[in-house]
Length: 118
Image (cartoon, rainbow, N blue to C red; front, side, top):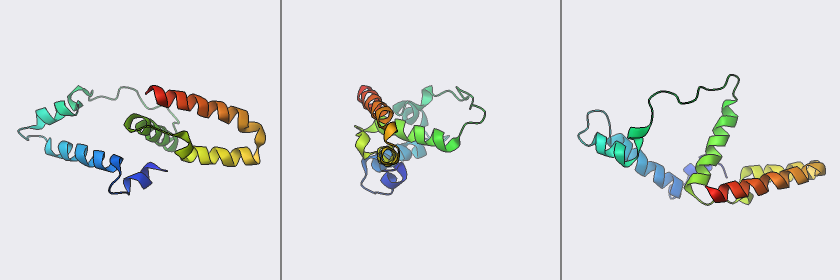
């Protein structure tokens, strides 16, 4: 499932969480009397205002967005690799090119260990 499809569900835990955080951020607008408290609650007061890492020349925005999408999923909820769009793509690839199966199996095994450790 994609993040976009998950956000389209009004009762999705991710949608509800983002609405909650968004409401706090909206209430923490510049000049609001409780802005400092809201920023501390969300730990936004510790975010540096400058870019910590400059974007790499030639970076693929779609790939960076996908990486962010997956990292956010791992952070917010248990992640089953079999539920990921990448898993379905890997199944299709191994059907067409069986020689890729060992590498993909190792990749998803490593991904499961990574997701469990976050």
